[in-house]
Amino acid sequence: ETGVTQTPRHLVMGMTNKKSLKCEQHLGHNAMYWYKQSAKKPLELMFVYSLEERVENNSVPSRFSPECPNSSHLFLHLHTLQPEDSALYLCASSPAGSSYEQYFGPGTRLTVT
Amino acid sequence: GQSLEQPSEVTAVEGAIVQINCTYQTSGFYGLSWYQQHDGGAPTFLSYNALDGLEETGRFSSFLSRSDSYGYLLLQELQMKDSASYFCAVISSIRQGGKLIFGQGTELSVKP
Image 1: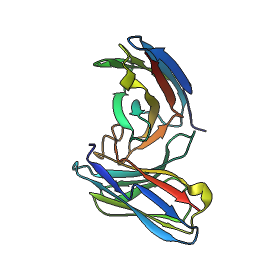
Image 2: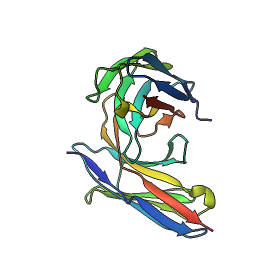
Image 3: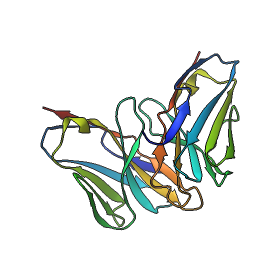
């Protein structure tokens, strides 16, 4: 149990759907991250929030839209996705000054049909 | 560009010692972390080196040489449960929130 939860664990959506991924951390951290993990590829950093402010947007297409309403919750809103967006989406958290030690959630396995 | 290189696969037997190397080329460098990920699981933090030298945590040790842009993870007294993917990751920015750049991962198979 890592203290970071993600819902849903699995999601299948069509290219015209809109859905949201949710992440919640119970560790008292104030930085949160979204990563994409595709088969045979490194984890790709998508977004970083520190103290609820977005500090990194790693050239991610606008069909992915993050939201961080408070330091414990992070969302990733999805719309008009492409099949190549199918991947494992991982959320992580850390103290703002300790990004080297991140705590990951179990991920959402997304399939775009 | 930014790149981290590590072997894609390593195989070893129970009780043995294995070393997983990582070389990096990044625009910024503030430290090297190692993570373990079992199949279907979340990555979990193993160790971090900000300075040159060896850090030991139980059966796992991690080494860094900043002048050589090189580090390694050493796993001793291998157990079957150590079969997993191991990722090195560079801290490329220390501004609030930081930025971790991950390597491709090394899949370790431990045989009886």
